[in-house]
Length: 348
Image 1: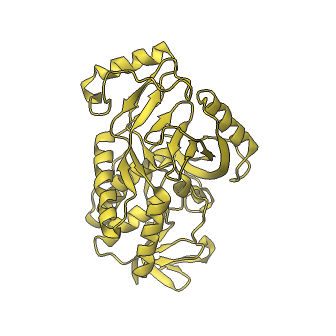
Image 2: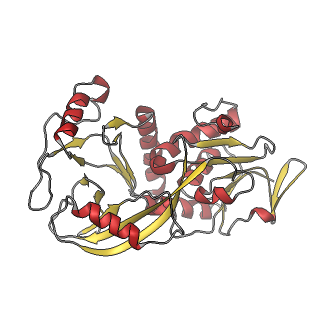
Image 3: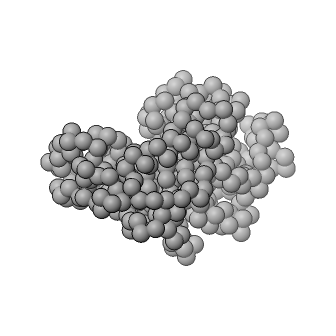
C-alpha cells in the first residue's frame, strides 16, 4: 500500500510529491500530461514588487529564499539549468507612479528589492516611456515547462508516476483507505488546478477561476537581456528574437481555448507602449485556480480525512508552491500546525 496518491503534476503536485518523497514516503503521482495547463504556459516570473502601488509580495522574504533553495536543489539533482535571477524594468505611467516609487525607495523594508533611486529611460524608438521606469531587484524566472518535464522524467524513472487521467468516479474509500483502479493508499491529495471545481469533495469551496492568455512574438533588435513590464509583460523566450507577451486575467469565459478577445486585449496593451515592429507567432491559454482571499487552499476534507487538497496558488504559484508544499508536508508528517491564512478551515 502507498502512503499518498497525488493527483496532478503541475507546480503544486510536483513540489508536494517531492517533499513527501524526501521523507521516504511511498508516493505515486497520477497525471495524464495535458499540454496546455496554467503551470506549463506560465511566464515563470516571480516578482517581489507588484501592482500599481509597487507593494511587496505577501511573505516575500521567506517565500523567495525558500524557492531559490528548492529550485537550485532540483538543478543539481537533474544537472540542468532552469532557474535564474533576471533584471526587470517596470515602466512608470505617470508622475504619480514616480512619486509612489520614490516613497518606496525611502522605506528600509524595500531596499532589498529596489536597485537604486535612478529613473531608467529606454530607447524611445523601441518603447514609449515618457516617465521612464525603475529596476526591480530579486525577480527570478523558472523555465516552468523545462522543470516540469525534468521532474516528470524523474518520477517515471523511479516508478512514481501513472500517466492516466484521474477520475473521481473510480475512487472509493474503504476501511479508511483510498482505492483507485489497482492502487491503494492511506491518503489522496488533489493538486489538480482548475479541475478542482469539478471535484465532488471540494467543488463547494470558494474557488475563482481565471482564464489567462499569452502571445509569442518575434521582434528584432529588442531588449533580450531583461524583462519589461508596461501594460503587459514582455519577456525574452530564449529563442532568437522571440518574446513572451502576457498575460490576460479574465473572470468570465466560455472555454479554455485562445480567443480573439484575449488576443486583441494583449495586442492593445502591448501597442500602448511598444513601438518596435513585431510579428505574432503563437497564442496559448489556460485556466488558473485562484481563491477569493488570494491565499493557498491547503488541508483535508472535514468529513473525509483521507482526502486532501493543495491548490489555489494563483498567479504567484511559482514562489508560493515550494514553501507551502514543504509546510503541508510538515503538517502531514510531523503534525505542524497549518498557517490559518492557508488552512481550508478558514472557509468552514
